[in-house]
Image 1 (tube, rainbow, N blue to C red):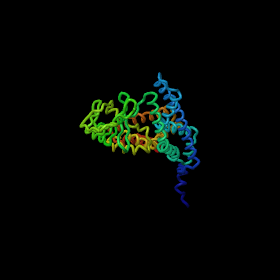
Image 2 (cartoon, rainbow, N blue to C red; image 1 turned 180 degrees about the vertical axis):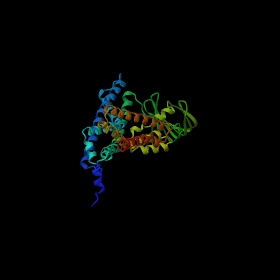
Image 3 (cartoon, rainbow, N blue to C red; image 1 turned 135 degrees about the horizontal axis):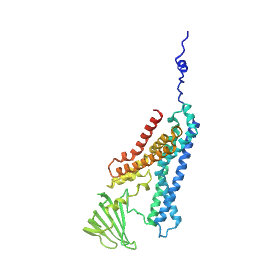
Image 4 (cartoon, rainbow, N blue to C red; image 1 turned 30 degrees about the horizontal axis):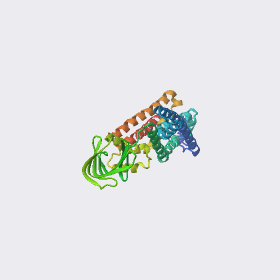
Length: 384
């Protein structure tokens, strides 16, 4: 007599064979990606609209009493908006991902897909791909535009509302400092720097009158910053229609302090992602610490990974709504996780700026920890 096969025996025992894993079709992938993109776009539009209103109110408050046109303030708020978008984008992806996964789960679309043999990791691939492409777009294309608009915003802020204006610039030719003393411009150029810009070598100082007419020029081997004065050594003073005069030492009054020089560096947020490596090299050649600029560059570079991690975290919350109940509690948990990550990111960045952590570790830790947390949680919930 022919013996029944082992598969038949399992069927008679009431144990159905496991559903084979299937590949996600192109149609389903595009469907999931479209849902994710629409949700993220909606969240970004709502949040950025609120941020624009808040920024405009703050500018109106700061400009109170000044004769600044309202149209100018509206333009400044719009110019500041793209930079805010870069900061908010990861958390918009988190909320958008939760909306996407919860909607598809409530309508049983993902339930059907999983019954057809599509694993949670497979139908997560399209939303993760959307987050990756969006992050790459923000880094490669949107960041330079946002940096240009932020630079313009800071210029208008300094012009109309009295914001901070940079006194210093660093380029291939060295360091340039500029200030006004009793309305008279003074421009300092040096090719060698030390002690965070307070010890200058190969110095040239151009002094002008209150009407900005050229007065004289000082060439010196060295200048060091003291208490409201530059101590200049081995100087040659040249004035129009006069014989150059050599002096062993002299003093040039200044209102600059070491802190003002350090604070006058170009804000890294006003510089394109592509231009930052060259500027960082110039800072190092000039003898300055480029810690802040390096940290910002690496944090921008880590943005795609952070956005992918936010999709994975959103799945750990969004996929639980209909199966386990407590939708409001789960949503609150997801939002709390986002704010906790934002707080920890600020702490880690502060440690990086102070030198307490290596720059690479400080910049990549939030994205790496978020990704590992999301993957571990999803493995625990879905695979046992």
